[in-house]
Image (tube, rainbow, N blue to C red):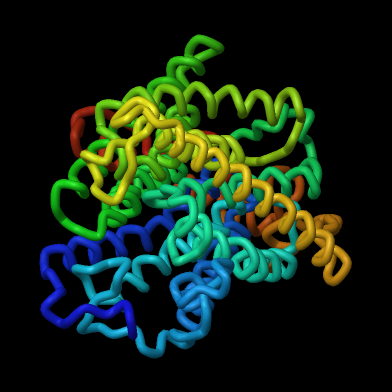
Length: 473
């Protein structure tokens, strides 16, 4: 990669293995995100979410290969955006290193960064669910990626002005990923307005499949170690401290959410899932710059702040951010980014800086982090508002409900759950009712046959009178 190259002997197989595994781990976050969101939302949104996230990830990955990587990591144009040196990934070698990652192949670094570029706009899907047209969604993520993600990533991770002039710190995406998507999410929620029955449930709709959400949350949690730990770009001590810090912040935040939900009502599974993810998102920017001991304290702060912000946004301001992306990702990303200015320690990362509590107790880094948060948040909000207004004029934003059709069927012509999709029993046809009945009978027979084999001496009827009667009819 021209001036960025070192030599083929730069490649360290241990570091390469770690980043390669981490890259694949981060890739799994995208289907995990689909599971998590689909399980927490209504059945009629399942197909929409899967299509948006998997389809979106495919489009964004192609964009990264074509021109995204070069716009972020190409030679800078006035500190604003990269040039076209590496368009179509030309000149990005597999057998040499880059200055951003001096011990792994340059192509692997590009592959790893592609995962961040792909998942960031998709985090917003949880905010505008059941309202945004799929056509509008496609236009939004493409333009959002070009106008928000690529410039901000260049400013902070490339050779952009925030990095070269101010030396802003963002280890794995608190600013680039979570602040941008979180701020844009709340803007989308405000512009698109409330879902149907928002007031009936106070914005907290019951989940359709909590085990599916838990599975998605667990996969996100596991993959996050690749997200943060892989950003060390080495398999050494920095990666170890990063994953430890990540875990401590996640569990402490999860405990906070669980405790508050218990105090307010009952211990909630949804609360602890969101709490863990809030901790993961918040520690992301600071995970490679702070002592893991302080990550526990930061996790508590993140848990309290994100929980209270949900109450502020949804209950007080009545903003229908369906899955609280603005709180779980945006607020936490901002707090974690600013926390570097307090807890950052050069002892944990030679490329980092000492925060207010360490070194010479300088407030400079704190000021830099606050400045970066303000700039990133304002840019994300303003560009998102502009994009939504333009898209609304071109294709329209909101889906107008058609009588007799649910969101998935109207937008995609598919249903995730054939029978559970229909909430009104009167809407079922006779054939559908018979299929359900026969399926239930077969399940009952299997269960009774199992009992009969265990208790052969007992006279247990295979079918009760009600089942027999229905079957005969």
